[in-house]
Length: 340
Ligand SMILES: *Cc1c(COP(=O)(O)O)cnc(C)c1O
Image (cartoon, rainbow, N blue to C red):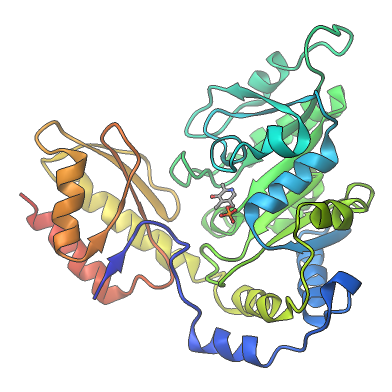
């Protein structure tokens, strides 16, 4: 038994999902003739109360396409210093869009309306790049699955309106926020211009993200996806997995959150732990005391077939998911409690 807690992307499709994939009705999506892809896109657009949606192979491509559609070369976007779009998409913001990032010093990956407003370059001051987009992340990845206070998002929207800025949500783990905070996706649809959602993290599909947005912006989405190399053919097989996940894997995220909290509470009791970040969803971030190195701790766990992620400087990460069973959970909690 290997207990893999490095990420919620390590899951394999369930039997039920495999059946849905095998039985999918498919067509050529480059002609927009894949009925299952069309169905998934329509379902997500309706779920968020937005005009249109488009399937992408990855979350990075969905975010990068959104940034491309919102900006012109030379402009600047505003994001938290830990933002995935800046740190983990291979420099795509500059590579694809010729755009720079103004990175703000947020709290666990979250920024405030006041910070955003302070960091907008004056549009008449032609020496500095023109600010044109704000990108938020919910839940935050590097911030440890933290959830925004929705009223802060509403305030940031007002700042965007006042200054004519686009507003994009990197919602790779929006599902976790929706479940943890008992929110309605339509509230997000009302606020953002574009939202990317991921189907292969907590939702457990083999691949796929969907970009959801307002008609005016999404008109360009097919072209931008094609340019990025993301025009695909019979993707209904993957879309069927997405539909299956929406039906079967959304509400169960609560179980992942419960397990993460129990891990967090167990860690807090241990003498070798310096600090555990607040655990709101399925990510636990913690720090070891000086008595044990990150490398040794990870190696000792690996000896017991347990994999977790190191984030450097004594910072470690655990992510719970669909394939992390009750039996694994029991063994892992025991291992943490007996660790010396
Ligand atoms: C995983 C993730 C993405 C997308 O990643 P891909 O691996 O390209 O699908 C985007 N944003 C956040 C916050 C993520 O955690």
